[in-house]
Each structure stands twice: as C-alpha cells, then as structure tokens.
Length: 333
Image (tube, rainbow, N blue to C red; front, side, top):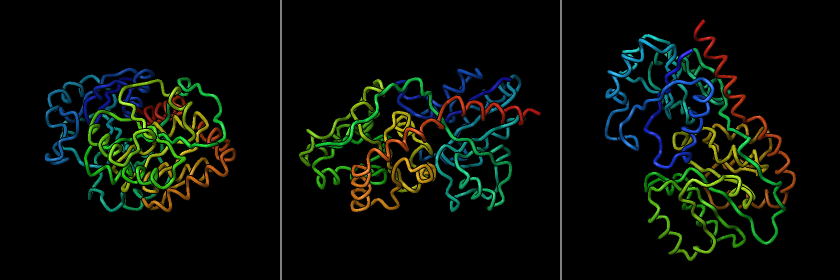
C-alpha cells in the first residue's frame, strides 16, 4: 500500500512544533510514503482562493497518480480543490479543524471524509455528505514520562498551546483573555508554547501588564515531559472551529500526563472532554466563565486528574494508525 500525504503548508521551521506534522509523521513511520504541501508558503496565502491551493503541484500530482494507491489530504476545513481533478486514485480527506455546518461547500469533493467526532459526522451527513468516517487523532504516548501532578498549593501553572499566527488571533485564540485572567487571579502562572510568529508583540503585551515574572514563553522545541512536569493543566481556546486542530496535541499530551484540560466548545475535542470529565469546556470566551472553570479544577484537582489519566489512554497514535489502516484497506477494496 503506497500513500501520498498532502499537508496544507510546508513543515514548520522548528521540527516537532506543529501537531499536524507530528500526526502525519506518525502515519508515515508506519505506512511509509512521501509528503507534499498544497502551498509553497510557510503560512497559507489568504489572498489566493482556497480552490486554487495545490495548483502549483499539478505536475507532481499527475506523477504520483501513476505510482501511489491512496492520496491522503489534510486541510483545516472542507473545500473543493481544483487540483483533485487530476487524481484518479482514491482520496482520503481529513478535516483537521472543526466542521462548521454554516460554511460547507455546496458539494463534496470525490473523497472519503474523515472527522474527529460523531457530532461532526452527523452534521456532515445531515447536509447530504456521504462517505464520512470518524477517526480521533492520537499521539505517541511513549514520549510522555511525567510523575502524577501535585495538588495546587500557592500557584496553579497553566500550559497554553496553539499560539497566534496573526494579530487578530491574540483575541480569537484567547491569549488576551489569558493575560486578563492573570491580572484577576494572582495564583495563576502561564507557560506558552510559541512558534516564532509575533513573539515580540506578545512579549510587549506581557511586559506592559507587569506579568513578565508569571508568563514563560517557550520558543524552541523542548521535551514536552519536562514542560508538563511543571504544569497543573493545559488550555486551548478558539472563538471559531477553524482556528486550531480538532484535537490539539498539547491537550492530548497533557491528558497523557494526567493533567486536566480546558477547551472551547467550538473545538470538537470539547465533547470528549465533557463526556470523560477530564477538564472543563468553555462555552464563551469570557473572563468570568474561564476563571470559574479554573477555580473548579483547582478545588477538585484530584478528581479531574484521575479522569484525565483515564481519558488520555484512549488518544494513542497506535489506535489512530489502526483506525486509518482499516480505512485504507476499505478504500482499496
């Protein structure tokens, strides 16, 4: 079985700092196969119509079409790419962010669609999209080696992933809200996983609020176990479903380390968090709701930590790979 993996953009400058490429890397370790990107730019060129992404890869697509058995495409949302017209082999389209039923194309591309939750699959099927499969992402849990967390005492350390790519995302990804939270709750400390973009602006915002001694920003790839060993919980916020990966790696890693998580309702992982009791779901990006959720976790930390430990075991790369293996075989039959 020969698979070509198609990513939305080239790999990050710092290897291991992007959850999607870690996911694709785990699949390639097991199945082999090459990887190409739809965009030649480091970030998606927003001025180019989405339908034209990948036009620069037409020659490569035609060539791979002669040699591979399956094309496996990853993209934040569902779109009809013109370049797919040049492919005659089976295509799997993994929607890596949440499905927004209000912003779906009129017709589905000729692909098997993969989403991460039953709720997303139901939303697609209700709009007439067929051939939909549910596969939850997973991580290599052997890389997580952390002692059980201690009960919060004088401080509560929060790990924040999915850093902003644009200035508007300081608000829509909740980073402005997190700084506001720190001004409200003096016992909170923040560790941020950054990826280079807008670092100076972030540092200036932290400095201007007098929070430099309570905010640590990690710019380079570091051992996530060492970082998680200093944290009590992890958080990823997003105002809309298309801003972050459906199952952010930082949250899956936190659960594997028995750390509770906080997540926005717009994210498909929120249903998993809610059902398993491994953290709190934030319905609206408001200071009061976020502060109340963190205080509830702090007051009942041992309960949330035990639930996190149990929930984390289901999010393994091995299970994700096995689910995709079955889908690949089904597509090939």
